[in-house]
Length: 176
Image 1 (cartoon, helix red, strand yellow):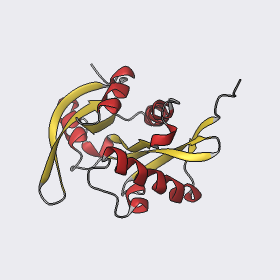
Image 2 (cartoon, rainbow, N blue to C red; image 1 turned 90 degrees about the vertical axis):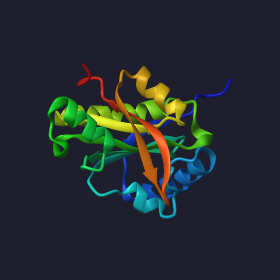
Image 3 (cartoon, rainbow, N blue to C red; image 1 turned 30 degrees about the horizontal axis):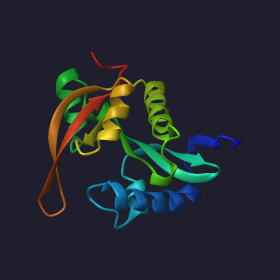
């Protein structure tokens, strides 16, 4: 009989950036996430407007990441929710930078990271949104299983004029 692996989701520290960046590179290689690429993974993990970030560990190894950021006018999901709800974009939070290393999947770490973000937004009493590329079907299934509600679709433009469709969601506590 083997023991179940030890999983933990906790606030990110500066020491977590390098292993999270290494996991991100593996995710990008397998899944094409993020679509923009990962030429500077540490910068991507530390975006402007960062409120909080978490990592997931499997047997003491950093294998996942999620961030909570303040929305800007360039956030499609925030603009959609603002138009729907009347909430100013500046008061909306965004679930961002969520991924789990391919070798660590199947332990509900993506769900645990998502719940950590949802709880942090709820503690702040602020709306939480996200967008996800339609190609990322496992992520879409996760969000819908957790009760996120679709608020629209957009076309995400990146790189040298590349486009990909995306779905925007609002966290369940605010969904109608």
